[in-house]
Length: 209
Image (cartoon, rainbow, N blue to C red; front, side, top):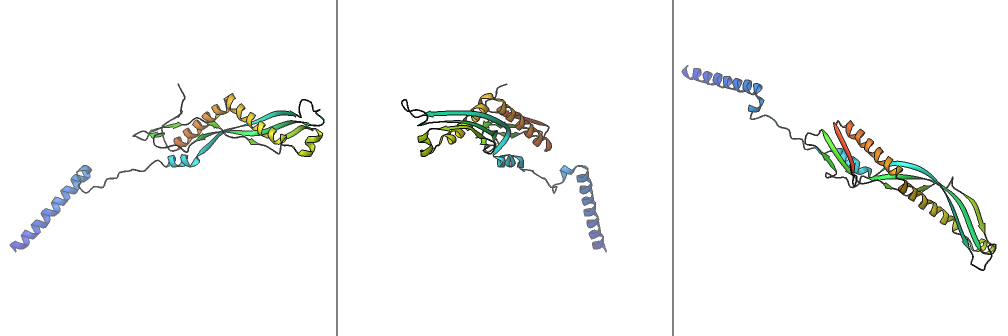
């Protein structure tokens, strides 16, 4: 009988102790030695998504240029025998692109509290124009007799010259590149804003305040 009382007392004492521990850890969870802890080391998936974009076409402009190329047959050869002139109207689109392929943790910096992000991008560049061959046209192609028999590459040369002119115009004006910076900034602000970042700062290499 005494042994039974001792066992019962031990069980009741253990149950009371467990109850006290459970009550205490419920009141102060940090005292629970068996509590689970979670460490989140998930990387920002948006960085990979940006890198996958590679070249981001941030702005586009339509250009029209008139190319006038003339080649004579020589000082003492009349134009009707040897000579050539092409007057060509070239139309095409030029894109400004931003390279996202080099983005890494140094260029996309997230604050410790994940409330803000700062993105540093390379300057936008002018892509090679896409000449609209369907709507571009030759206004004049005047050839001497000799040129008509030997064939001509002057029209192709005029097309290449039109592409060069469009590229130079897009780069020199600066309007297309400025629009590309504005559009890229707006796109990234919207993207990171949708991911609930409170502050998004976008800068381009070489810019000064």
